[in-house]
Structure formats: C-alpha cells, structure tokens
Length: 245
Image (tube, rainbow, N blue to C red; front, side, top):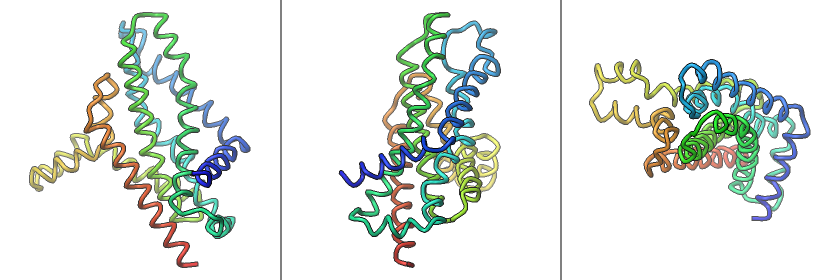
C-alpha cells in the first residue's frame, strides 16, 4: 500500500509540475460551461437541471482524457525510467494502480471544480440534486474507464502522440458501439445476441441512465469491469515489457 501511494503522489505531483494540469482544467471548465449554457440550450429549454452538462461528457472525455493518460507509461518508456521503476521494491500491479489512481484523482479534481455550474443551476431553479449527484458519480466512473483505456495503450508506445491517437480511436469505438448506425449494421447480418453484445459495450448506453438519476447495478458493474479489465491488461503489458528487457 505504501509503495502504491508513493507512485500515486509522484504521478499526481508530476501533473502540476507542468502546464498540462492547468491547461486541462481551464479548457475542461470552459467547454463544460459552453456546452451546458449555450450548446445545451439551457436558457431556452426552461428547465433547471444539469442534463445538458452531463450529455456532452462522453464526447468531452473522448478528447480531453487521452492527454491525461498518454504520458503515464509512454513517458516512462521514452526516458528509460520504466526499467528503473521496475527495479524498485514495488509490484507491477501497485505501479499500475498508483499511476491510474493519480490520473483519476486529477480528473476528479477537474470535475469537482465544475461546482459553480451546479450552484448556478440551483440559483436559477430547483433541480433534482439527487440526479445531479448520480450524474457526477456516473461521469467519474466513465472518466475512469477512459483513463484505464488510455493508460493501457500508453504502454504500447514511447510516443505520447501515438498513445493519444490510439486512445481516442479505441474510446471512440466504445462510444459508437451503441449508436443506431452501428447496431443496424450488425443487425443486418449478425445474430441478435451479437448485436446486443455490441450495444452493451457502449459508454453511452450505460451512462445515459445514470445521468438522469437512475443508478442501477449493471451500469456500475459495467464501468468497474471496464476499469478492471483494462488495468489488468495494462499490468500484463508492463510485465511483458519488463521481461523483454
């Protein structure tokens, strides 16, 4: 546990040692405000809620979360510190978990800083605060899934740019898998169970219910499983890189 916390603190501090953290937070807050009050047509809808705020998160995370995750392992491989890290008295699992939790905590801080939007909506109307809390929880879980994907992919390359592009592509597939155009394609030739399986992989399908305040166990299990599977793959890949020397 102490080793994992050491990695967590090291990685979290690394974000704030560079302009990345501040640029990310400013852009994240700015875009959330634009999407909620302008593109989300908050003032013309005549309804005080944060539904427009959460509706854009899957797409916002698609382009903003990969930059947070791309440096986790790609930078270690590029600078040659991966081998040094693996020689320390720490297991691969602890290193993977520590890095992931640091990135997730950083993202949680950025998400928490959107509270003025919540306060504004509360001032303008009487929103369902339970639904908003559920939306924040679902958004944080979904961000964790994006981060787990990005962290795993960053092991595959020394280039942060390549890690970013691959993370966006893979994450995009997990978004569109639930869209009608994809399901219609599979429905035209694939058996029903395969079409349903593809649909069940979509971030949108599991996040849509949570953002309206409906928290169901299958949706929580889905995001937890996504995080667990990708972190396990991350551990396997790091072990493979370690064995290869």
